Image 1 (tube, one colour):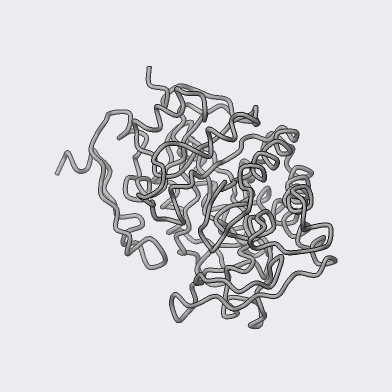
Image 2 (tube, rainbow, N blue to C red):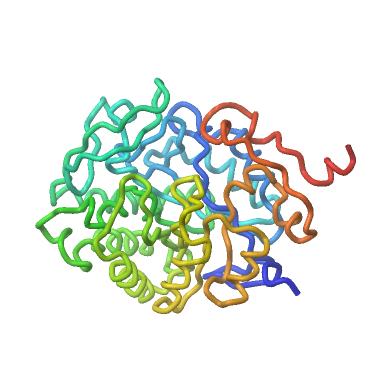
Length: 368
């Protein structure tokens, strides 16, 4: 039997297969960062019985956004919109984890409350762009968070996790990859702090571990997960010792009995695969040596490579992104080894139903 299509227990839940919808920023939320019926349709389309879906990155604090159109759960007004999504997923027999994030320095004042300055661990010039009413624009130089502000940051994740519970999610994943705030604290290219949140591996991992424990206090550890991007460089990220850093972080997370650890392979930078990098799994292979729990691998996988990493034991499930955008029935296509719809990168971020809910299912193509 295909390794992708064997049942598996992940934290508190049983899943019928191991094809996971990756968290994918699509920027279709309405005014007030509130999801609407179009988002509910999108997630419902990509739900199969006994499947695990992970929501797109969802803003955990009012100053946490980097993209106009991203959804939030930093305010009670956003709960009902997310309930449309979770109800739609549950009606199709799936489960969905809420991915919470804070963009940190990857932002622009245009998407900050009252045009305020973005925040990060340290004030360091960097490249990157944010999405505003003017389109893709350069990030606004950030200021460094004061030490006393970090406790409120952690509390914002706890409160957002509570709203996620009220919205009907099945668990929470903290986004600590892709150059966003937790990743900025972890990697020493962006963290030059001299307080208890900078310097050593222990100090740089402190805020992520504090936030993870805060979310566990709401959900319990078997419904909480973390996403990491070992060696990830998206957002001008770099570390002087990524292997040492991420094995330390994974070891510490392993002590928390999480539902899973979600790892991005370094060959993928943001939403683009870098063909110059090693095509073989690196992140999962490295972290498996120190992490005993369930691992989801992501980053440029196809059906055969997903089968291989599971068979090798380096990961237990595989998250698919771009192919899931263009193939709402991706698990069934992989099961049947059916051809895939090509994706349209121009419609990935923001827009309407075009390139969002209009990709055909395989059975529709056959009938045509």
